[in-house]
Length: 402
Image 1: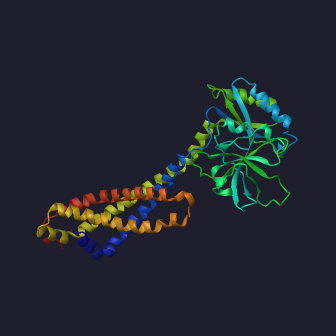
Image 2 (image 1 turned 60 degrees about the horizontal axis):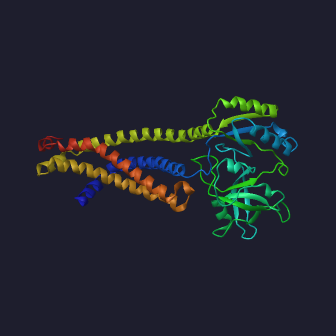
Image 3 (image 1 turned 90 degrees about the vertical axis):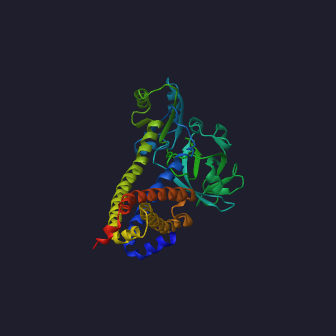
């Protein structure tokens, strides 16, 4: 039966070519959407590396030159922390160069002088209280501490991917490295005092990357911090924002502040990241609907053209069920052939690594399975009525067909 169906499909190859192209196009569209959704789901399930419960972020705009060391001295830094921590409702205050769920990032290159490995990493500056405030868990080593004052090397905390990129499978804790391009004797070396699992500052849908967190010391850094991280006591609501804003204005009326709980920033970030997914899904849905209508019309026309053939089969003893199964089986075979061609093209993505981890093997296999299921279901639905119509033909209709 299978061999007979292949012969029938081959003899009508010119007519079947258009159906196959439509199915191939639909398969590629569904695969792209499925791959995007599967990868997003994969990223969402990964840990972000920090906690946002009761944490608020304040973005500081110092107004150009006011961000210099003279305007953000250690005295100013300490005064801001002490004053805010004395406010009822505030539990802890920390400074950082950026807060989670902001698109603003800073990247730089680093290298291991001994091994020669070069790594690009996202760089975050944070004071001693920032990591504990955010609930960042150490896999090895420790966070920053006042005992790091005056250290010969700048204390840094790195995530596990960066430690592996710099030092491979060997131990990374305590190792010293430097910024790429710095000549010997220029630029302070950096020493790893702690290793964390991960820290995805842009949220659940961001791609894991190398992260380096540098200890911030007001006296040693040229620029002031751009973000305040504030741990609120349980039960504090958004109504507290007015009190906090008034307190910040008293500290420095020339600066401007953007205040928001990290839960709100997370919701905004999630919305901006999910919206493209929804738009693409709607577009793909309309395209699939157009493909379905075209496929249904072609199958209807093919059934009409094949009335003599199908009527003759009924005349020599084929049952209505045989005709019905033949039409559906032919469509399933056509769909399988078109998808096989599509898979041969799409498998190059994980093989070549053209899209990196966005199209790893797990994403490819799940997206392929979902896409094939959708196309088989679409083919089945589009062939049900033409198959039923063909099964209702009688030999007399074939004899009267011109």
